[in-house]
Image 1 (cartoon, helix red, strand yellow):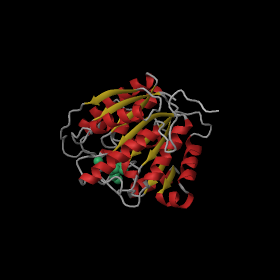
Image 2 (spheres, rainbow, N blue to C red):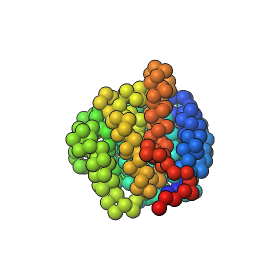
Image 3 (tube, rainbow, N blue to C red):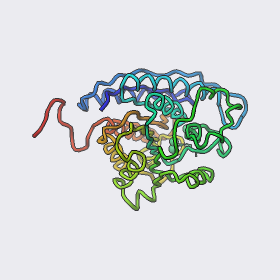
Image 4 (cartoon, helix red, strand yellow):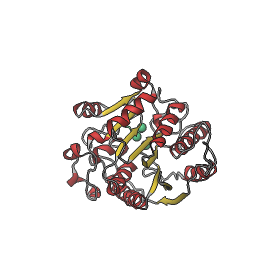
Length: 310
Ligand SMILES: N/C(=N\O)NCCC[NH3+]
Ligand SMILES: [Mn+2]
Ligand SMILES: [Mn+2]
Ligand SMILES: [Mn+2]
């Protein structure tokens, strides 16, 4: 397992710092005695400004510049052989994290844990919010759906994923254009219906079987906190009822850690600006627990580093 690196990223759309989690994560991971040395590479600061009126998507200049910065930071961290954790901020940052990770690890596979597919194209997105479209910028088969000439702030970006590299878990709120894309390309996806039908272990096992059958590919896990039910994650921008239970979210994290192949992790859509005080406490707690489980903290308890039992 790689060492751990913490990069905390400011939310691109708002200026709400996510420092609260990165500091908590660093101290929690260390105190959880998971034997990792956590390096916090600090916040990436962005110019957040209103772009020209809507041009296919909202704020393309600000988001294009920010995700370029994220890509460079993640690429460097992965090249430094660190398990790279990026704290969002909304899911648009994954344009940068996945691009940067793929530059260093072209053979990566992707687990997208989310209530949403985030694979609208600039032509199908109802809102124009880029956090509902990141995957369309990254997938080779959707390359021609992006009006690249109209989006010069993304001229640095090359699609780096094949649709067969992706597995979705937790889906329960898709736009028609996204449903069309998932069906047309037969992309591996397990909605909450399949989680209820097969159980979370079977779902995450089938997801890994689909994208990493030989168990030889680095894993990028992009964990949108709204994949977990709003009862535990009320401080997020687009909550959707009937989500993963806290325990199912933790199971995914523990299971992926045990592959030993986790190479980069995003945790996104935690927004301390929305929800009640209790929502904020619950959401950050859920984020920290999921993150530390991804990094080796076990609900069954951890041995102190260096202890080996027969
Ligand atoms: N949390 C969100 N994506 O994962 N928000 C955007 C959804 C738009 N369909
Ligand atoms: Mn998302
Ligand atoms: Mn979401
Ligand atoms: Mn958002």
